[in-house]
Length: 137
Image (tube, rainbow, N blue to C red; front, top):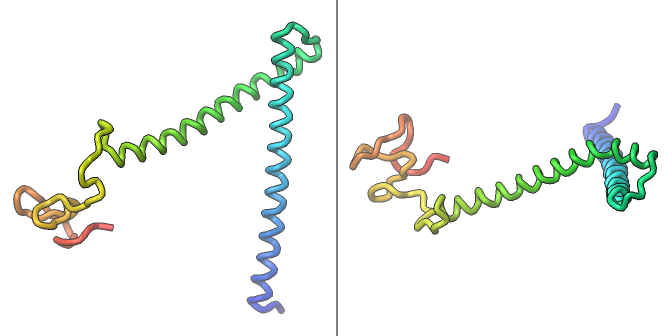
């Protein structure tokens, strides 16, 4: 019978082996995709020059949908990064890209009352079940 320590060690070894295989699989996939992308670029150049054989034309036709998908994925990936950056800028400056005074300050109500919890003074309304002072986190 294995002790808990031995079981954990065995599990760690299995996990490490699985991760190694996953990495190898990912490397193999990326290499194949890069080779296909390189071949597509080469065939496109030949097509532009008018030096494409019928066999190469068939290969190019087979690669075109894949290349279109790769371009779309690449654009989506870039769009996602830009969106995060834009969201960050809006949070720092506000919608009109004008710096917002006290953006990091969470207290905007009267005399240190959090705007998230509020009080019934001066038009502020308390949130049910919350403390009058302190932030909701």
